[in-house]
Image: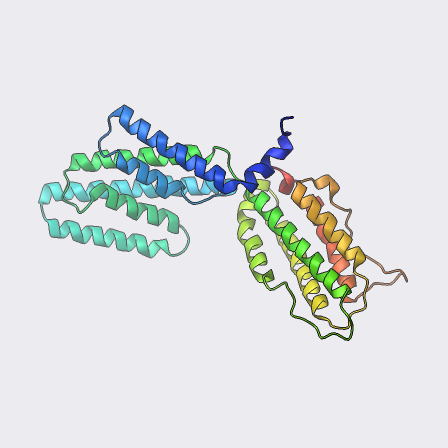
Length: 321
């Protein structure tokens, strides 16, 4: 039986490296075939430019912004390189040419640190590809510029073939972290009260939070979820992780974590399956059995798990793709 459409994204996500490797291989073949069929000299630079632009594994939410940076950076570098070769042809001052190359690359390095760094990096690389050491004829520079632009065009086209979505990576990372919380809570509940507390196994929690945060800009662009809503989700996630760490570190905790573990399991399962319909209904106010607010660690954990459920359910864009 053929897989359903819903089964396709997880397959592409779980084998993301293989899909990306195939995309790179096909793109290299396309570059070679195009330069050979068009009879373009210096076709090597088409393949080099393609690899420089597309080798990094990118999410669909980054493609639009990266595409603009690639095109602008390449055009700036190609134009700068041709101007350098043109002045070399007119003036014949090789030392001035070298000085211009050094100044241009220095300017690219200055802007490569910070916003727009990728664009500046591509500008510098394109300049060097087009000019070499500045002694080539202008005609060679023109062919190299054409090769670079062709390589960038192929890279942009291949970027949209079977794209990877940041939402998949974000959901999977969060689900794994929540399942790690379940393991810690169950271990804490089974702990002998007379046994000294052990170091919590959630040592990678900071790295997980950082991974989730770095994915947020791409997730926002892909899903259309407001940034404020994603910050609220991130805040609830931080509270859930913090409560779990504190509970796991408490040597004499006699609290029932069954409900919390059940909620964690339901949320993680929904994230892994990518089905918003199975997210447990959440609410901000979770009273204890006596009808009063439970301000214990477990009570706070349950409250924020319900809040996390509600926030996830209210963001349909996170479940697309």
